[in-house]
Every structure is written in C-alpha cells, then in structure tokens.
Image (cartoon, rainbow, N blue to C red):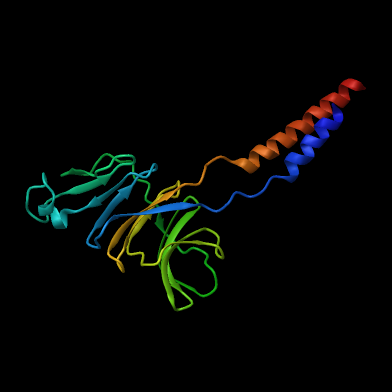
Length: 202
C-alpha cells in the first residue's frame, strides 16, 4: 500500500504541466467596417450598434440614425434586431499595453482577466490581430487590422477588421478545467494518506 501511494504521489507531482495557450475559432460575422460596438457578455453574446444604418434593418424605424441594435446570441442562427440595447451584462475588457515579442508594434489592444487581443505590425511587414498572453507565441487570429472591439473574461473576442471590412467573432475554445491543480491535489492527497498510514503502523 505504501509503495502504491508513493508512486501515485510522485507521478501526480511530476506530471503537472502548465496549461496550453488558448485556442480559437474565428468566424466572419459580417462584411462591414461601419459598425459601432455596444458590448459582449461573459458567455460570448455580443451587440453592435447599427443606428447609422437603421434603414437597413426591419423594425428600426426605416430611418438612419434611429436607435437600432443587432445582437448575436450563441447557438442562435440569426441576430436579434431591437430599438433598445439588450439586457446583456457587459464584460468588455479595457484598453491595455500587453507584453509582446520583439519587433511587434501595437496599434490597439484590449485585455480582460489575463486574456488579451491586439492589432499591430510585426517586423514592419506583417499586419495582423493577435491574442496572448505569451509574448513570443501569441496566436495570429487574423491577417487584417484591429479597429475596435472587446474581449470578455473567458477570452471570447469580437472586433472589426477594417483592412478587410470584416466583423469577426473569435470563440475561445480552451477548457477551463484546471488540470495542473488536479494533479497537485492528487499528489498531496496521496502524501497525506501515506502520512496517516505510517502513523497507524507506529
């Protein structure tokens, strides 16, 4: 019994590894650069203020510059159009200055709870939108530009790529399971059981 507990403790404590960087699925929601962001919530629902083009949306009065909001809900095929903002609990993040790889010039950046998204120019040649927070291995989400947007505390992001006239939603697929902590807990639990077993033998 003692040998089994020692082996489990050693295995658990030595196999605890850092979690991998976030992985994303980026989807072009619309082809436009004329959108004003309203916000994103913690599960990735987001709203765009389309009042500038209200005449294009049925139910918004038929006249531009009237209040008009387009909300994209997860797992819902079509956006919902309203004349008032939806009751989302916003989780937008805030402007920041992330750490980046040498040669990166940042134009715009937004961070939230350890997640970040930024647009910039790498080595004066490659324009794109990246996410981190690893300065060396940040993930290139889009080859275009970051012309406004948000990132929530889960890592989901929505932004305008003005270079390619696209509204893009980046869905953070990374599991929230704290795998390294589970291994550490298992290892310390096994060591505790070993201590109790030795005390009983004495």
